[in-house]
Length: 127
Image 1 (cartoon, rainbow, N blue to C red):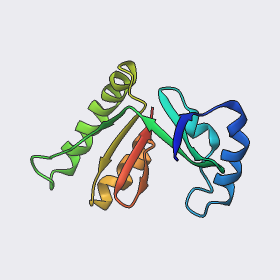
Image 2 (image 1 turned 180 degrees about the vertical axis):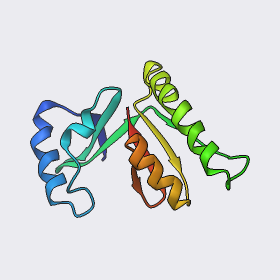
Image 3 (image 1 turned 135 degrees about the vertical axis):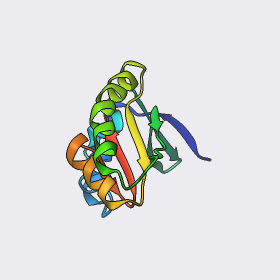
C-alpha cells in the first residue's frame, strides 16, 4: 500500500543522495524541495520512501504580443511590467512564475533579463 506524508528532517539525507545520483536532477539542491511557499510530500510503501513530490503555488503566464516583429516595444513592455508583476505575485503567495514558449529570442531574453531558467521550452523563475 502506498502512503504519503509531509517531508521530515530525517528525510533530507535520502533526498540529497537521490538527487546527487539522479541523471536528470543532479544539479537540483535539496533546499528546492522545502523552499518557502512550497509543500513536499514523501510517498512510500512498506519498504520505505519511493519519491519526493514538491508542490508550489505557481503563476502560469500566457503572453500574446500584438506584433511579434515589434521587438523593441515588446522588450520595453517586458522590462517595464515584469518586475512589478513578479513582486505582486510574490506578495500574493506565489513561489514561482512559469510560461512556455517556442520563441528562442524570447526565451534567451527572459533568462538574461529576469533570471528565468529554461528547459524544453518551459521558462521558470523562482520568486
